[in-house]
Length: 148
Image 1 (cartoon, one colour):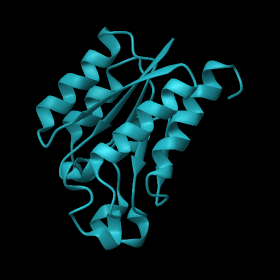
Image 2 (cartoon, rainbow, N blue to C red):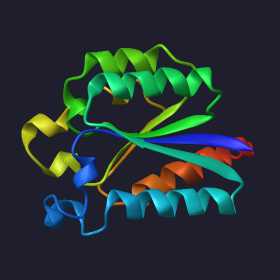
Image 3 (cartoon, rainbow, N blue to C red):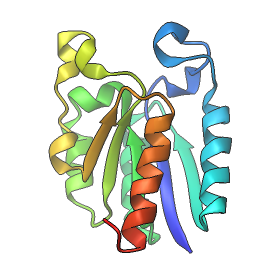
C-alpha cells in the first residue's frame, strides 16, 4: 500500500473560519476526512498533520522519508514565501513533494507570488481550493501505476 503524507502549515487549522471568501467554509477536519477517504478508495494510506510551527513541519518532512512515505502533499502556508529551512528540508529528502495552495497566490498580494518551495518540489497546484489536494493525490496515484 502506498503511503502519502498530507502536511499543512500555519493558519490552516483555521480553515472554515479564516477568510472564508478566500479559503472557503470547509474545515481542515473536512479536508482531512475527504483525503483519507479518497486514499482508502485507491488503496493509499493518507496521514494528515498540521502545525503552525516551522520546526514541527521540518521534523515531519524528515520523518516522511525515514518512515517510507511515498509522497507528500504540502501546503506550507506563509512559509512558502520565505522559509529556507523548509526548502532545505525538502531538498534534503528523497520523498517527492507536491506544493498545494487553496487560493491562487498569483492573484493575491505581491509577496505571495514567490515560492522558495517550488524549485525543490515535484509540482505546484494553486487556486483550485480543496480540489488541489485531490489532484496531488491523483498525481501520486498515477505515478505509482507508472502513468506519469
